[in-house]
Length: 138
Ligand SMILES: [Zn+2]
Image (tube, rainbow, N blue to C red; front, side, top):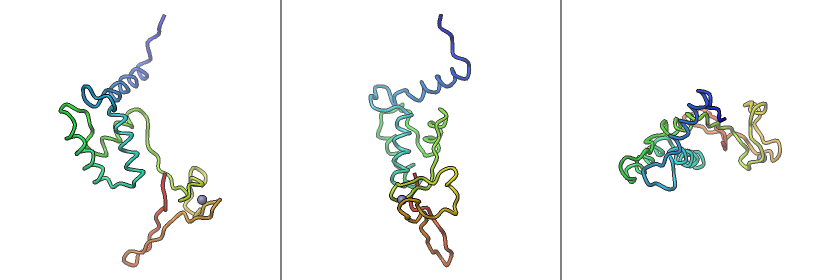
């Protein structure tokens, strides 16, 4: 005899079914969830601004058939992924990808890679104010 999932599991399965529905009827390549993940990865891989991301997904949306479920901004893309309990964490990493500044080594006082000694931060002077930015994030 098969047991029904508990209400919390059922809620997750329902959200998963919605997220995995095709972007439009007949779409064979992407669901709202997969499109969100691909677009969010592009945003982070290419350090895309939120404004650029929003315009790109809005263009994608208007080129699709009507009644599509394409999100139209960064907030909605993140939300469709977060509904499933998936989230995005960004951590500083070595520019040569030797190490990730994560957990106990996320402390901002650690300024060089343990392996290749590359700088963790890039210092920029703007209007006589010195600011430090991570060289690379993952
Ligand atoms: Zn390194």
